[in-house]
Length: 481
Image 1 (cartoon, helix red, strand yellow):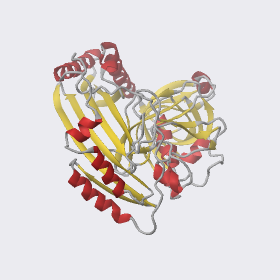
Image 2 (image 1 turned 180 degrees about the vertical axis):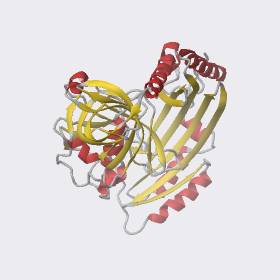
Image 3 (image 1 turned 90 degrees about the horizontal axis):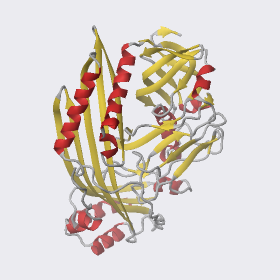
Image 4 (image 1 turned 120 degrees about the horizontal axis):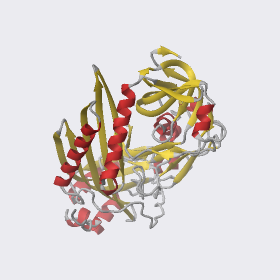
């Protein structure tokens, strides 16, 4: 394995290569943002790769590098944003002219710069360079062969590696700077099994802000294959899901995606400032059952959703959103925090330099309770145990959601019973939290594969929760409960 080399500095990436002078950039930014309420120059350089091994061969391999800047000016509620893939003084001047078009009326007072820290949540080594191309292809071929040898019912295997290395620098009106280097890797395995005419699928993945190393040891990648195969074989034995209103027990870890979608988005500052969230105006009020506590934490080392600083240069933090069932916080970027008389929670995120930041989640999860998982299951005579989820949809204004279960079981007489297929959970985000009856002591975070979409921007994120019992949740299925 090649020895990782020192990553290039911000000066090398953003100034030396482009022939830019730091002092002139500072003056351009200062002039562009003069009289504005807020704004920044966001510089980005990114390398990314993706390898997909499918049907016993390398199906695709891609490598991409991109660089550019985004210049934002904020006046009141208005935002001027200009971006370009060309890093040059001429491009910056054109962007400065464009963003100043929003400024009208009296001069504003620039919002204060975020306070810097020396905290580092992940290493800055480039994962793309730390493992050779041949080694990556060999690993994918080994995953494929191992999965096919595990069970004669395996019909198809797909394995993929994906990584990125992103360097950013944020420059503010007074020349203050913040910078970050962000590695990110992900390994996914999908297994299709068959028996007769029936085919079922299982998928599992892992990832984080690290090198590939934690995931490419034989024990590590075999565990991912084993889990994907286990899910596929469980589904091969599944029966039609029950339908109706019933008690649902959600498993730990990835089922937190329901919390992310049905509740987390509704607690983002922009939706609440505009009063389009079902949680708007409820600060300080009870929105969940007693004992329910939800946090969004950007400070967990090496986690997929973690960031040393957000994309406005603000250090991330652990933000408490719901405490003992009471709404106590929103996720804020600088713009919405200023307009709501609050402060940024380090939640201003963007997909790339071509996008303006907005308040987004990082690692969102419910805190653990006191009940053992088996104790929770034992209290349910008849219901559904949902362990894994696929796609879901939520309406932010109403809070209504629909989620598809990819692994679920009947609960009968306090025991996990027959696996079921085709179950969907239907409900309302604010309402479902009030129906939480028991919270487990087994908090788990997802394996590191989450991607969140909002207004056309996709960003990495994390979810999690302990085992949780929800009473009176509507389940869509094909058989009567």
